[in-house]
Every structure is written in C-alpha cells, then in structure tokens.
Image 1 (tube, rainbow, N blue to C red):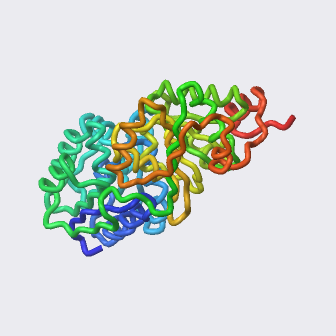
Image 2: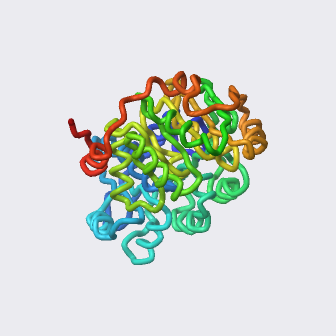
Amino acid sequence: LAGKDLLGRGKTGSGKTIAFAIPLVTALAKSDERTRQGSPRGLVLVPTRELANQVAATIAPLAKAMGLRHTVVYGGVGFGNQTAALKSGVDIVIACPGRLEDLIGQGHCRLDRVQVTVLDEADHMADMGFLPGVKRIMDRTPSDSQRLLFSATLDNDVKVLIDRYLHNPVNHALDPVDSPVEAMTHHQVETSLGDKLAVVTRLASGPDRSLLFTRTKHGAKKLVQQLGKSGIPAVDLHGNLSQNARERNLADFSSGQVKVLVATDIAARGIHVDDVRLVVHVDPPAEHKAFLHRSGRTARAGAEGLVVTVVTPEQRKDVRSMTRSAGIKPIVTEAVHGKHPLLESLAGPAQPPRTIAQIDHIAQHGRPRQT
C-alpha cells in the first residue's frame, strides 16, 4: 500500500493473491490516470492459464467495486476476445508471458503506462522457460513503477529478476524456504510394480476429494481410463488438453461432481481447490521443490491433509533422498498390496463403483446419471 517494491515468500494457501490484489486495485483507483485503449496500468504475470483465471477471480470483485476493468490473457484460445478487451480499454491485465508478448508484437498492448507489476510464482515461470520473455516484458514497464515479486524460492534465475527489476524491496517471508506444511501427514507406501495400480485405485476410491500426480501427460490420461474401468470417475489435467477441457475438468473437480483429479505438475502450483483431503504421488517427482508444491494442494488454509507417496523398490533410494531434502519424515509402510488395511485408513471406505455408462455420462454432462 505504501508503493514500495516487495519481495514475498510464503506457504501455499497463505492468502498471497488477496494480499497483492488489494493494494494493486487501491493504487490504480487512487491514481489520476484514466483507462486508455491498449494501455493497462496494472499487470500481473503468472505461469499458467489456470492460475491466471484464479487470480482474475480474486481481482474481479475488488476491481468492480472501484470501477476498474480487467482482462485475462493466455494462449490456447483465440485472440478475438483478448484483443477486443484491450481495444475497449482495461486497467488490469492478468497474463501469461507468451500470449502477452504476441499481443504486444501485434500492436494491441503497450506497457509504458503500467504503474504496478506483480510477478506471481516467479520461480515457476523460470522453471518453465519464461524468463527471457519476462525480462522483455519487464523492460517495457516504467523503471520507476512499483514491482511486487512472489516466489517460493529466491535462488538462481529468480535472483536475476530481483537484482534487475526490484529497487530496495521490502521483504516478507512468512516461512522458512521450502518449509513443509505442519498440518500434513506424510505416508510412504512401498509396493511392487505389479501391485501399484491396485494400490493407487484403492487410494482413489474413498469418499473425499483426492488429487493424484503422474510424471507424464500420457500417464495421467491412462490412469483416468484405468480408474474408470474400476468404476471410479476421474478427470485429468495436463498440457495436451484444450483450454476448454482443462477448465471443464477443473470445474468438475472443484464442484465435487468428480472426486478424483489426475494431473501432471502443471497443477502443482496455483491450483486452489478447497477440501482436497488426499494427495497421492503416483509417480514421485524428480526433486524436492516439486514434491512440496504438489503436496501443498492439501492442508490449505489451516485444514489438515494426507500425502501418500507410492514407491516401487527401484525408486526407494531416490525418494528417500528427495524427502530428506524436503525436510519430510514420512511414515513408511512396506509390502503394501491393493487390499492392505492401511489403504482404508488413508482413503476411507471405498465408494460403490460406478458403471461405465455412468462414468461416460459424468464425462459428458458433469453429473451422475441415476440407474
């Protein structure tokens, strides 16, 4: 609110979005500058389309209350609505770097009137290769404008952004870097490759909302099909889906119409879904930061949550090293099979399986069909 540059770090679910949305809207509402065609005064850069939509949902009521206009800019959809919004004049643009650069290159957007820039999930943007684009975009904003950078980690590429674009920033670190969430209970379930699918299926069959992570897009799609054959409706979220499909699947999961979401790391950051009780690392990630971000989809905003990492014998050494780096000491259970009693205590009582017809109906219409 004081207009200073800010470097922020905190646990997922700690209220970061509303914390930058309020001063962003306040600064623009107090300014004498007025809305102009193609020249936003507030800019929020985010790594993924899902996060762009969720940030926009937080900003929307605040902006409306102060008579400000906003729009969302990302790839995977047509240019028409985005160029029309910019042409009509918006105060705030929430954008993914790639599409914003396209619109700038086509002459639809200028950044020389930007008063406040927010870099959200800066480390994730660096991990996804957006850093050169972020620098080009930042170079187009006035050097004396306010800049707020949020990141779970402040090393390597992120430090380059801090040193280059933030002037004497105020630091706000809510937690030690990469600190685990205390309300989570971590389990490491060791199983054979032959028993793995049965173990994962039992974990997904409980009554509560669960989020399952796979390493690849193909693995996510295949697991949704395998769960469906066992009578468990599930939806997937990964980069091969169209934007409409991603939004529909996330909406079905958020509303509770489907209890199981199978995702790649695209969903590990910035996906805010309440009441996810169980996160399952079907395929353990390669490094501890991804492990913590995935796990952070549960135990949000003070709620409790369970995290289960499914480990085959050949993965045991790597997973032990990863959890140690993450500061996690999981409860380890060996020789787990599909009917192991531990699985019921983790997932809860298994729900009656749905028929293939019912699951197809959910996939097409987003709600169960009675039989």
